Image: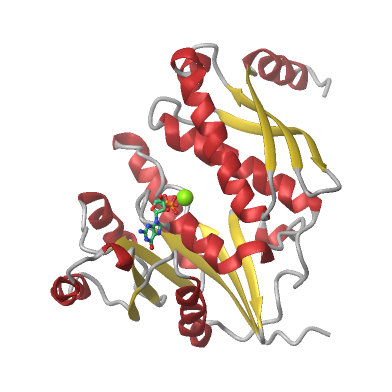
Length: 296
Ligand code: GDP
Ligand code: MG
């Protein structure tokens, strides 16, 4: 029998580079337990699950925040954001201490009025002059009705525990959504694909709007814990391939290297990652054609 009596979904929002991934890694660490998720949970992209005492925290991503999409797409993306935020129990909005950028401000109107929004002011360790912090906190406190304002350093493990304690009262009464146990190979495989996809997306910015999919062809855990991962990054068009690869393959190398580092942190193990970029338009079109002819 599970002792968990309170569980909830927590959206993590904030412009790139404020420290979302760092925080999630600190909060869930090796305790990430994304088993193949139940149907009702697949709507959200789950970043990590942490079970602690009688509480289960399910951290979810908010697609749309991490992109540089503008103009026409913007509205559609904002709708996704608004919808996601309306479905979760708590919203964690992350800022960098002493930095309030236009990208941060664009998030404000999307924050839900009927959900607790907890503002995390991250990278506290980088603030040399602590006397400047208070005026900054006062300035941002006026921007929205935050349930809490919590200065933290995501690099500091103790801040992670402190944050869980702050979140705990906002969790609704609920049985757990996920098992409490550890990582399964399947979940790691899924996470590995998500991490790689995010890096590819992030490091190509607006240049490749939609068409990146990641397929993990091989995922092996060796006796000493080393993960051997072969991944294919599929793009929609031939023209997207050089964008992803970059000059002399430099960009793809960076994508793979950053993805590998994230995986190593998350899995707490060494990762050997090999990536190939392939164009999928051919078989996509064929599949669509066959389907339209009734041959699936
Ligand atoms: P994300 O884009 O919001 O997911 O941001 P990341 O988690 O990838 O962090 C961006 C950069 O900020 C990384 O280099 C992190 O190491 C760094 N970072 C995150 N949190 C902190 C913090 O509390 N203090 C410091 N000094 N650096 C941090
Ligand atoms: Mg991130």
